Image 1 (cartoon, rainbow, N blue to C red):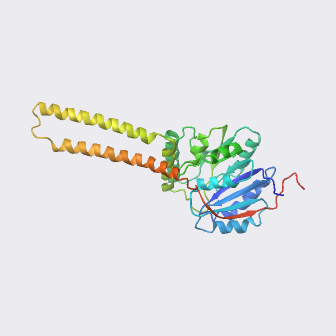
Image 2 (cartoon, rainbow, N blue to C red):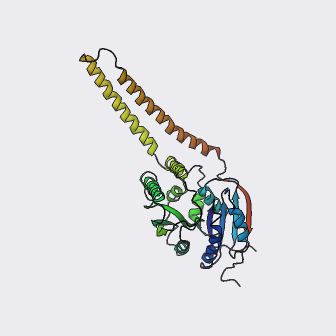
Image 3 (cartoon, rainbow, N blue to C red):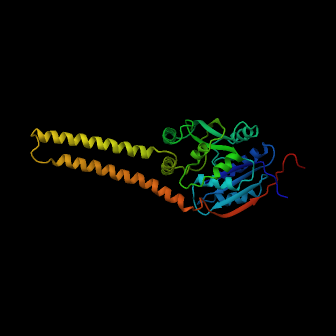
Length: 322
């Protein structure tokens, strides 16, 4: 008879080879501190290092039940979390990073909040962080822009960790959009929310894969999926361009009538061509981004592919069982 699972913890894994030896004991303590049975679902997102091999070896000796899934390539951490949610068997679900920068005890608080039915989804709000100045600057810039133009309800400092019940999980999985934002989706589906503040720890081992390029691409996906900002920028840029062109035309016409211009001026013509040409190219680029994402969503390709799966039953039984 299959083991009943009460809770599931989803962990995306990418370039976390150095963190695995510390992560597994922490997860063992975390699962022991919770009532019932808690499984851990690892999703190796096309990691080029030995993260998958280390997990495969280490999970054989772990007491908690676990599932180890391998993406066929790197689809991104949010696609990995989605894959974990699809295969998780619990009633409550939490996602956490493998680098242990978020305190694991926060997951326990999340699950207890869900158990008491105080919320449908709980977010970890970063009140403080122990990162480098450059990383803090980029993060603050990213989340400030995110709050201003994508999801105003996101707290200052952003969110990286969350937990939810089955209702939110099912609503989240009903959204099948490529090039989208998991954070924006979590806020878009609604339900009862609760926030828990925490201090982000300094990364002790390895290097974060959350590079400036990934941040920038994720911001674009969030904006084009959940904001009309580019369209409004395009609209007002076009309006301002038209107003400027009319004013420039009026100025040239007046100067011509007063006799200040005997020959059609080269500079005003070139300025007009450059300005209107730039607006046209800018408009085409923005509309192209929207059309490309619309095309991607009409292809109905799977958001991720699994090439291998391992199941580890663990030695942990529900605390009411003998």
